[in-house]
Image 1: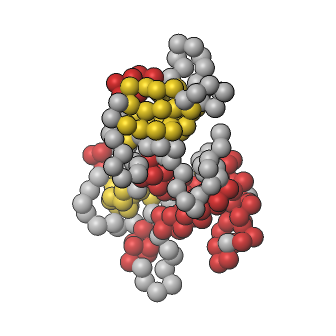
Image 2: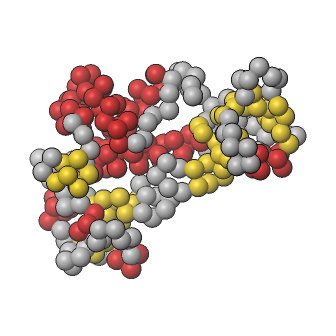
Image 3: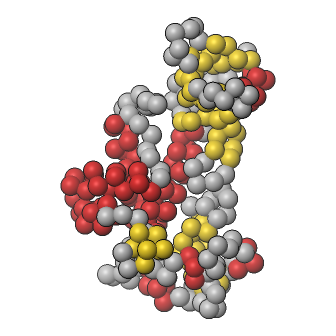
Length: 249
């Protein structure tokens, strides 16, 4: 997640939080929401970026980190994301990143989160502010962004000395990149022609290509390096790493 200052609609300068892969404005550090910088249903204008210091009182209160000052929302979101990811690894599933999935995760984990329990209980009540139904809870978006960043880092990891074979990876919060393929990674077959999009597990990677097991009762199928980008739409997630359990579909 990128943190850069931006000029708001009223001329105040906020610290703004951006998607590090697309430049999309997620929120501002204070509690004023991103709509202090952009009008609803409009994209962020890069011309609003500035190197001038923040003048928004709410942003400054958090950035100055004076005794008793509120914690930075991105730091809180990162802590939430780490807890959700650890839980997902323990359960053997990738973390759910949609709003309802996050809400259910906050609900399930709230009793065991110690000092964060009041926050998790608040987040478990839903994504919408009850006073403003159109205004989403900013920590959902920030937590989702930290989870997407971590999952992207994982997608880029393969065991040492793995021959280089790459495939497309689509970030949940936007942005695409080419990532290496390793044993245990799950790849989704390109089903544009057939309408069938099976997901298989990579069982071997060598200089000629990859072996993929679709768990359909047939032996793993071999794909040459040049076939991988054409035959597979994207990599779903990286190979499971101890102590995480094996992901399920």
